[in-house]
Every structure is written in structure tokens, then in C-alpha cells.
Image (cartoon, rainbow, N blue to C red; front, side, top):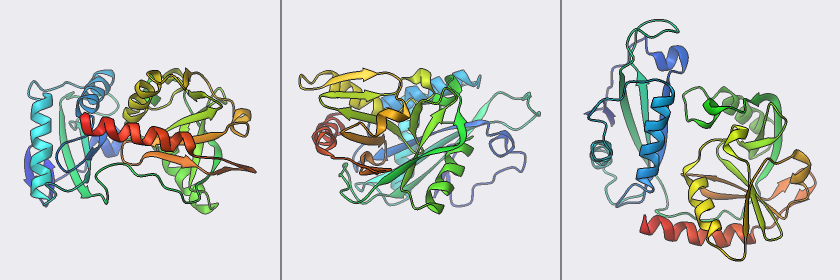
Length: 279
């Protein structure tokens, strides 16, 4: 079942002139439904609106937080997922018309939902090895921080990881700094210091990244640093972990010859779940 611009349908009709297909002229949000609410909904909503403004899309007056939340919960109910944990993807696409220059800056949306196994985040203790992906580089600019439908670096990097037996890859920006992972933000732990790349390095403006930064900033036993990460720092770290809305926190167990602990990741996961329950 799909919520297609406010209509629930099993057969949404997409035009062959869809600008999301033609040019990647679309933005999206991946959301976690815990069984009774959408986690960090306000943060997702405002990130979506900000992304649309940056891409110069015309935002309809009815696109309020309440409107979208109601439409997404209608979708969850139609998919028989009410009371069950679920993943929701909400995609907003500019209306068809024009070539690079659109003739219609209006938008439409569609949303899909699928079941998740757990309502709250759990920590995986299995092997999770990563490598640098050097075939292509992220631009350290504002567009790279958005969740747009143009994710070819992430797609080709995921294929590279699978072909070479890695669970994930880390992306470098054009300054050769480590910006993020293929599917989330990166955090590096060294002693009591926790470091994550700044948005100016081109990493995604992640929702769980924001939540963890707020959590860490209030803890006396850790210091938070938002600064560039050199590839040389990776093997000196005590821990590396990746964050995103669906997984929460994913510890990295190995990068090249270095193995990592997950003590800090476990500590932060409990605090993140507490925030999900309260948020």
C-alpha cells in the first residue's frame, strides 16, 4: 500500500516524465515508527522542509507537520502496521515539466511503509568491517548534506562493499577527509573524546546524529568535538560507529588491521532509546 499524494492505493501511477527519475529532482525522509509514534518526527519534518527550500521547491500550504503525520499514520494503518514497529519512506518530487529548468516548481509526494523487527534500537555484536571508498568523492557543500534522490556515490559504494566482503564503506570528501559512511553519520571515540565530522565537510544532516550530539553534550564523562576526521585517525581510534534513523548505532568492529571496542556505543544506545521513548 502506498500513500500517493494523500490517496491510499496499491497501484500508484507514475509518469514517465517524472523529474525524480529524470534528474534526481526529489528529496526524501526515512522514518522509524515505534508502534505508537514516529520517532523524532519534528526534526524529520523540519529537515524535509529545509531541503525543499534549498532546492527551490514550492511548498504547499497544507504541508504542515500535522498533515504529514496524519497521512503517514493513515498509511501505517492501511498496511496493518499500527502498534508494530515500521520503517517509512516519504519522498517529495518536483512536478514534471521542463528540462533542467522546471516549468512547474510545485511538488507531489508518496510514502511507503514496511515492518521492522524491533520497536527500539538494539546493538549488533556481529562482525562489521569497513573500508574507504575512493572511486568517487563527496562534495563538501550544502547539497551533500541533504537527503536527495541523487545517491549514486552511495549506490556504487554499496556495490563495492558487497563485492569486496565489507559491511560498509566510509566516504571521503574532495578534501580527502572522512565525511560519513554509505548509510549514516560517523562518530570516532578516542579516550573520553567523541568526534564527528562537521556539516561543512559534506556529511548528511542526520537526525540521530543530532540527537546523539545533544546527548553527548550533556554528559560530564565525554567531550564532543565536531571537526574533520583524517583517514590516519581511524586506526588510532578506540571505537568507530555509524548512526542512522533505522539502525540507531552500528559499531564498526574492524578497519584494515585495527579492531574496535563498542563500550561507548552501548552506553550511548541506552540513552538514545530513552530519548526515543520521551520524544
